[in-house]
Image (cartoon, rainbow over all chains, first blue to last red; front, side, top):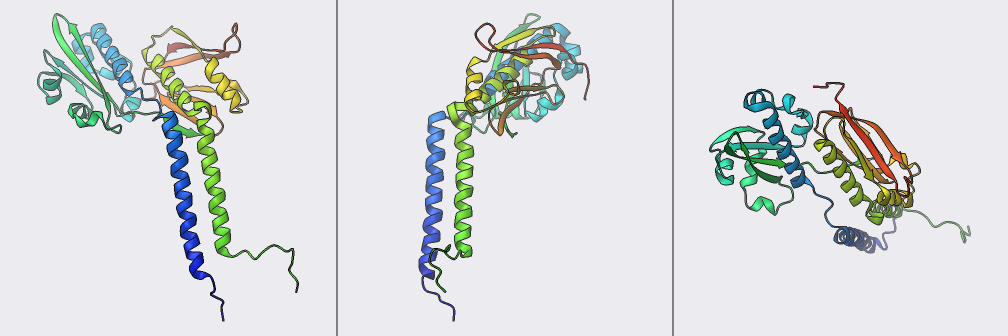
Length: 157
Length: 142
């Protein structure tokens, strides 16, 4: 006959073991997280860089060329842009809210831009970060809003 | 038979516990090792900084970056060749910074340029300088 002595205590041991592993993991990970923070986030900064490139490109190429082939004429790689879930919207004689709502739209690319209008999204790190810039072109006021959601990728080497 | 001194019987449960403990410590070591001296954070920072510089740069520009800080981190984390610390791949438009063994932080540049003359000059004159040039995109992969 099989000896079953101690089988109940083994079950308790397994539970205690797993519980300790989970507590230790949570402790170490949260200590490191509290010490080093949430990593480096430059999504907003990248949005401003994109805005600067867009404004410069519009000034150099003019409206027709800009609208005809944005990626080709502005020297921006479409694949990287799409993979980064980047988007932008340019509006003429408009403000931020109206531009997000789609009024006075001059040119736009990508759909994520609408998330910039969500107030709650600013607190959620999973939502894209947005950058807004104002500029004048041929005597008229423009606003460009760029959104970006690409974080640094960790790669095993 | 007297088994005194012999290894105790290993039940399958014991083996599972030992494997789990070893696995746990390997994962924890890997995680903490990556955070040594903030290696992960600095790798993220430099990878993004270099990407942003490439995105902003015009053809013909030469960019020089002081990498003394991250050189010290990489050296302390036993990265043997400092020249492997920063890697720029024009094909994938990828900038990878590796400051600890086994992991790198990568980000992508969208500017249609090629990065050329990538060099790491050690102690120039007393700090390490990473430099590269921005050239015209030679191969169109669209």
